Length: 201
Figure 1 (tube, one colour):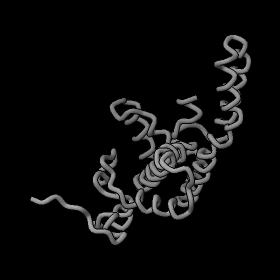
Figure 2 (cartoon, rainbow, N blue to C red):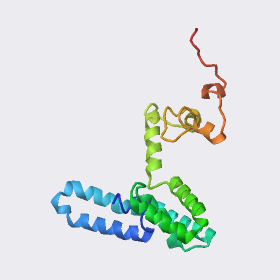
Figure 3 (tube, rainbow, N blue to C red):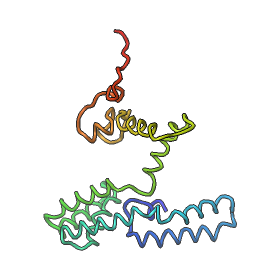
Figure 4 (cartoon, rainbow, N blue to C red):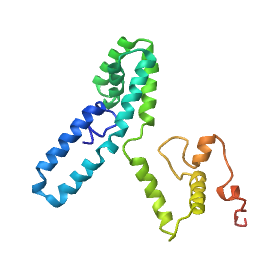
């Protein structure tokens, strides 16, 4: 499921659906072995299939768009994307890379760049929503009622609060608003008109 169905780089959406259904059917056939463990997972997967695979439909469409842009077969564009599954230290990576260079010539560099950008910007399943919910839950716990004013303040705070760390270069100690606007902004409290408390030297 992780490597072939829900992986970012993988088969087309239809093949993923077939694999997904196969896995669910195999789980169903084994439910009697541990009903209380297997059934809840199987039912959850069954109910969420379309949502979990929505990213694959979108990925297929955008790979076709790249194929149309460069006037090359969609199957070749998928080959370029599948190169990302092979480790660069593996000789197979360089064999495939060389073969694609020969087939696509001068277009290869641009196609590869577009495909890499597409993969980097593709959000899989509901991971982004789940991440947001986990971040918001602690703030909602502090209040019995959540009105529009509180949500607006929370939105402002989260957009202007600095990331303490990040796996992406250049994002640590910057806020989402600063990253988007490309400049340093005052502290979020100062933007709301407050004066920050500063300790005496």
